[in-house]
Image (cartoon, rainbow, N blue to C red; front, side, top):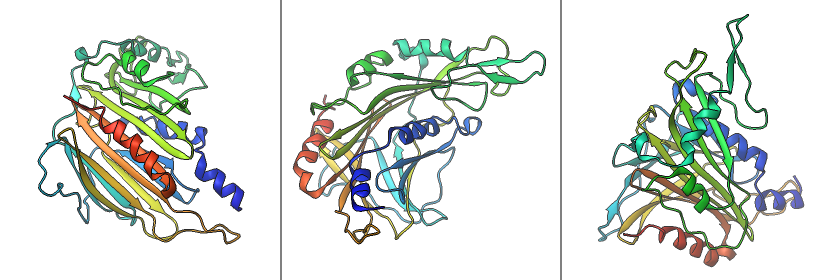
Length: 326
């Protein structure tokens, strides 16, 4: 990789790769187990961030994330950090409650996405095998009893209205840029994952708003997660794993108090600055994840930026945190 290629990789995120991320996030790679491994590019190819929807947590070897000293606020969960068996850094956010909501509390058109799911798999009467008959342009599950939907929107407000859950907050994003992508993902499950029958009913179990922006070199992801009583696990996202081929990744966490809410923050430290093949030193960038859960919705802001853009990045973060008020 030369200098120009590297700078291009830092400044932009490949959309095709991000689509693959969301496929895995929704469990289309291992739907029956209720888990998926997701890879998101934050840096050049050797550094990856993986979100894992897991049925159970791994044993962590270390824990950080104490409360802000002397401050008492509403807390939605706790953060733990440690290392997995492969030596990768691990962060776990544990909400303070079961995050599943009654399906009856969701009133938007997202409930109609299960109708599309019914036509995605067809049982071949000659072979008895299920065949994919859904779109080849979108996402695809690996079991006929799992349906999946991906719909694009122009604004966060439109996506929020499409879901129609009273407790869902539309995060504030004041930057005048169009999203690189903004999707509402939803999945549904039939009673029998392997053989749902000729006219299956899919129960909506997972809904997320996934958005990604580039603001003058600042990379911003605003994600919201909502799960129903049909979701297998009591939370939408269990853990983040961060690995690096060259050197350890160190995680630290803290809490930030805004509007009497303690936001969990995880900072990623990739160690000494890396260099390209031709010896050019890569400018250090800051990689942070902000987490809040409220009214049984989990929100995440992922942001990475250069030190020179700190002031603008902090304003984006402040706008997001100030979205949540009483």
